[in-house]
Image 1 (cartoon, rainbow, N blue to C red):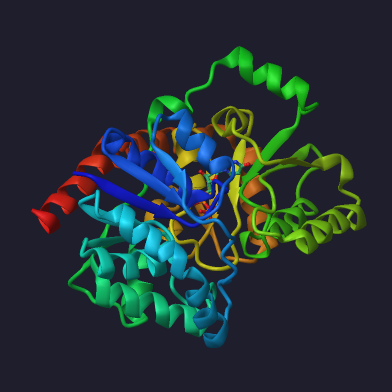
Image 2: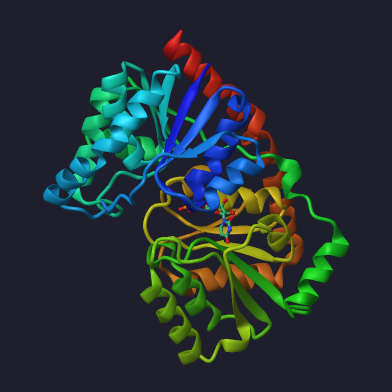
Amino acid sequence: MKILFLDQSGKPGGAELCLIDIAKPYRDSCLVGLFVDGAFRQLLEQQQIPVEVLATEAIKVRKESSLIQSLSSVTALLPLIAKVAQKARQYDLIYANTQKALVVGALASFFSRRPLVYHLHDILSTDHFSPTNLKVAVTLANRFASLVIANSKASQAAFLAAGGRSDIIDVVYNGFEPEVYQSDRSHISQLKTQLELEGQFIVGHFSRLSPWKGQHILIEALTDCPKDVTAIFVGDALFGEHDYVQQLHKQVAELGLADRVKFLGFRSDIPQLMAICDLVAHTSTAPEPFGRVIVEAMLCGKPIVAAQSGGAIELIEPGINGFLVPPGQPHQLAEIINTCHDRPEYTIAIAQSAQEMATRRFHQTNIDRQIAHLLSRTFT
Ligand code: UDP
C-alpha cells in the first residue's frame, strides 16, 4: 500500500515519534510530507523513511485560533493543498497525523480523489483547542475521513462527544520496540556521575515544558519529600512556552530547590535517562491523550506515577503496574514519591510486572498488525 503521510510539525513531539514507528513498515512505498523543516525530518531520514518538506511558508493557525483566523489561514494554505493533492495522485491514500495535516489532507483528498485516514493524537476538547478548531477538525474528519485512528479510548470518547462519527473510528495504542528500552549497568552509573546525581533518589519527568504538562506540580511536591529526592526535567519548550520556563526557574529558586532540580533540555537518550531514575512522574493537569512516557517508563522497568486522567487511566492499574494521583495535587504526588523512596522492594515488584505487561500490550509488531488490518479492512 502506497501511503502519503502528512504531519505539520518539524519538531519531534509524541505524535511525530509515533509516526516514525507507523511509517517504518511502509518505508519502501511511502512519503512523509512535512509542513515545516526541523529535527523531525532528520529522525525520519535516520530511519530511511522518505521525507519531503512540502510547505514553503510556516502555517500560522494555532490551537486556540478563532473562525476568522482559521479561514484566513485556509486561504494561505491553498498552494500547499494543491501541492499535496498533486503528490497524492502517486499514492493510494493520505494519512493525516496532526490537526493541520487533517485540514490540508481533507481538501487534498477531495481534489485528488484519494481516501483519507486521520490519526487522532489529541483529546478534542476545549482543554486543548478553541471551539472553532474543534468544529473544523470534527467536521472535516466526518466528511472526508474513511478511517480515524484514535490513540486511546479517551481520545475516541472526546471525538464522539464533539460530534464525531462512531462508524469511522477505532482505537490503536502507540507501539514500542522493547529492546530499545534496555540499558546496561555500566552506562547507568556513568550517566549518574556525569549528571552529578550519585546517591540521590531520582524522579524523572520526561516531557516538553508546557503549563499543562505540569512540571510545576512536581517541583512543588519536592518540598514535601526528603532532601535526597532530586528531580530531573527532560524536555524543552517545543511550542514557544518560554514564559512558563522562566516561571519554573523562578519557582525552583523561590522554594530553595536549586540543588535538587535539574533541567536537561531536549534529549534523544530517553531510555538511558529513564534507567538512572528511581521513579518517573507524569503530571499533566489536563487529560493526556495517550502518554508515551508512561509506557516508556514501564518498558524501562521503572515505577511510574501519573495524573489520573485521559489515556493514563487506560495504561495504569494503580498498585498493579504503577500509581495514579489526582491531577494538579502536589501533596498526593509527594505521598507516592515518599512511598517509592521508603519501600523500594514493593515498587520494584510493581515496575517489573508493568514491564512484562507493557512488553506484550504495546509491542510494535502488534501495533503494526492492528494498523495494517484496519487499512486493509477499510481500503480493499
Ligand atoms: N521525549 C524526547 N525527548 C525529550 C522529552 C520527551 O524524545 O527531551 C519524548 C518522550 O520520550 C515521548 C515523547 O517525547 O516519547 C512525548 O510523548 P507524550 O505522549 O508523552 O507527550 P506529547 O509530546 O505527545 O504531548
